[in-house]
Amino acid sequence: MRDQIKIKTDSKEQSWVMTYRRLWLVALLGCFLININAATAGEAFQKDIPVIKIAHTRVIDDLPFFVGVEEGFFEREGVKVELVTLTGTTNTLAAVMKNEIQGGIIGATQVFFAAKENIPIKVVAWLGKSHKGTVCGLHVRKRGNVRRVGDLRGKRIVLSSDISSRALISEALDRSGIKMAEVIVDAGLGLDNPMQYEAVLKTGWVDVINT
Amino acid sequence: MLEMHGVSRRLMSYNQVLEGYVFSGVYFSRAYLAGHGKEVRAFLRGLMRSFQFITAHEKQARRHLPKYTSVPMDVAMRSALRDLTGGGRESLEKLNRQQDLLIKFGYMKERVSLEDLVDYTLLPKGGALQ
Image (tube, rainbow over all chains, first blue to last red; front, top):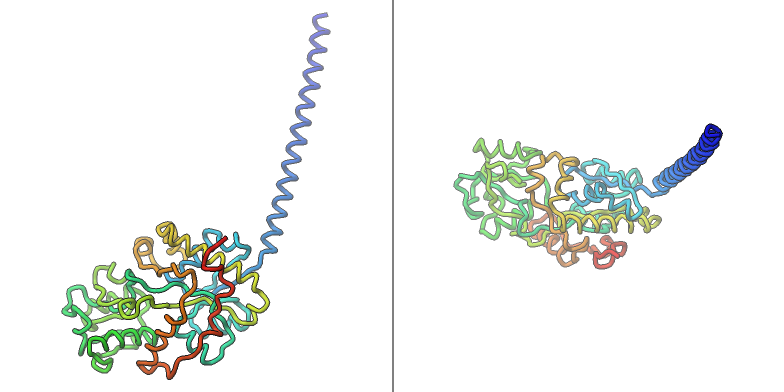
């Protein structure tokens, strides 16, 4: 009798275990299907989101693009931004015109020339401006004898070929009563990074670096 | 950035010559803009979020620099960033001052009108985001 009761109890327990297992299987299957649907929806979202390719030049000033991509700001607004490394205004313009990339970064001075030449582009935003903490400008040897812009007459300056920085330096010299013709300009050094600037300053061969 | 290496010292910054100097902007072709206003608007909203993030969380923003540039982290954390408070807009008057400087030193003959080339209509209003 006791055995019969035990058997009955066991059978009841087995039934509960089976029901429990079935419920688990149904729940797991449900989760699996939900995941599949979510993944498919995610892929569809990724596929549907428009892509904009923007050229950049790997410089600090392009930080807003890096932040936008890394922090997901562009995608959150409904567009995927791909950053393409491309140097030279002409190269970038050509790629934009052919729609190989959709946008680029252009110097303010190049904008003036683009306006003059009626190049079919539009600047839709500026990427900030200089301020009191801006370091771009003229740099001299730390322990050299150039203390102010007025000391630059007859000194050797390394200048980039960029006309906007040349105009700014011409203005700085002009305010101190010095003409560009009164300094020795080296334009062909083609310095690319701070280490090269540093090395050239260390040699004493040049007095001022424009960067 | 150069003076961080200990060899040089800044004699004069561009900002001392022309305060609020505008260096560069982002552009699209007119053909692309004509057919993709919605996408460019979304792009600009994302860009303005970046501006706000850089202004509010500068240190966190700077951490992204080494991945995309050749600067090491220590320089990335100290180099000067631009003033982004204009929300992508700069006055034509300010840009015309820059033209005048180029004209003064013979790099340009005369001012050109920027009204047709600079277009803020796709930017979020006032640089603000909803």
